[in-house]
Amino acid sequence: MARVRNWYNQSKPATLIWFISLITFYAVFRMASKVSPLSRAELQVSNAERNRMYDKMSRDLDEHGALFLKQGETSQSLLLSDLFDYKNGSVTPVLKAANPPVRANVLYMSPEYSLPISKAVRDIFAPTLDKGQDKTVQYSTGRPCTVFGVDWTEIDVSGTKRRKKIEAEANAVKGVAEKLCRMRIVLDRVVLTSTGVLLGLWQVISGSDPVTIRSELRNALPHAPVKQLYAPAILHTSLARIIGHPYNSSQEGGSALELQYIHELVVGLNKGIRGTEATISELWYVEEYDVLALALDGKMKLRRFKFGCWKG
Image 1 (tube, rainbow, N blue to C red):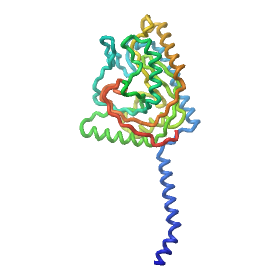
Image 2: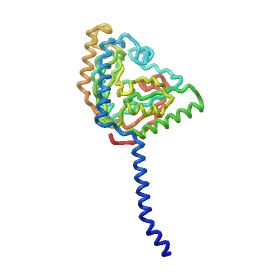
Image 3: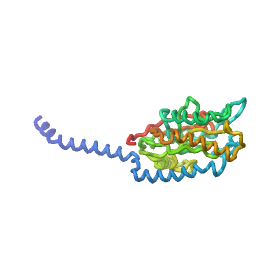
């Protein structure tokens, strides 16, 4: 018994050292598994790239005219008549089944931040639109959130094999979310595109950067299309889609006077909400069963994944 007690007393320091080493290794491993936020200098470079992109987007309406007032194409090469139906003084989304369903990874903005922005947009634009054409908020009141398009994939198989692939995708996206750090962002400006989409364009204050997020998703989803809808650095929210002539304008679409009036609305909105800050801490994996289901509040399935790092 004395020999056992003596061995135990001699082994305690070694056991303690091994235990401390194990805890240290685990902590370092957990830290290494996260995607480190960009340094201040790296963020400045990334934000500068976004700023150049946003400057170009700000010129789109002047350079191409108000195509949406002429029932032109949307940014997805669809006609407005493909997306909306105007009958008896009201506008309703045209929901069409997506075949095959499209998956999207989006960054979720909670109602804490999105609802005040949506209200400001409605307050500026709603009084100027024809009766029944108030599409200031793209989402229904049952979905008060704003999203960022991050990545998308398509699968052309069906049945059990398709579901297994989708489950594998969702698990891969969950793994990416666990590496990401909470994002603090600020609204840089609001622009109206030539296709009638009112966009909120954001810069990053701290946390994971969109370029990093898309890179991680690219690595996790190797079969995703090489050509994506959005540039790697862009961070934007779709605030509204304008589909009718301003109520106070009697000019035909594309006239200088009408464009000036629309610009004034955008300027007024910028004065009210530019500089708004928000926090992003969720990555969503969405299956869109209808074409543009996220934009038109169509049929979809959501999977929500929390970020694993709260440094931002």
